Length: 189
Image (cartoon, rainbow, N blue to C red; front, top):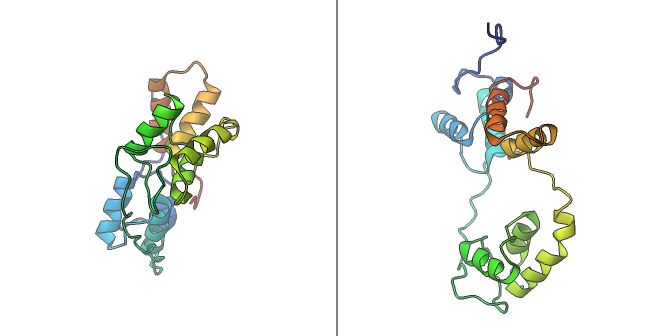
């Protein structure tokens, strides 16, 4: 016998939902984007902003304005690069940068939050400054950073593994699927 007798079933994303009902369930970005397309709601700005615009549209409220489109990044660095290479405005965390930092720092290098921020805000600084920044931020990075609300799967998996240290990935993903198919509290955002 199923323990889900009487359990709510996740609705299909459609114009028939209210904003609060939309907020009660987990939706993928692809589902939200498709619903936005159907409703004529601007699709940019990330999952959190898109959800808020959809909630407004579903409730008949003027949707929040989509963020202005940023101009695509200008010139991006190309190989070869060195420690003296200056980071241009709008540089992304690219494979060229990843290869450089892995070569200088080692295989432990990854673009974590401090390094993504350094690249995004580092115009005019050098890649050698980035290596210094990496080493200077390791203690704080090891403290466990807050995971943004848009990364709900990551937060769930971190918490699940903390509660089930011997758990396997397949078990964690099965728990995630069960979690995302359950409603949230009223008017969660």
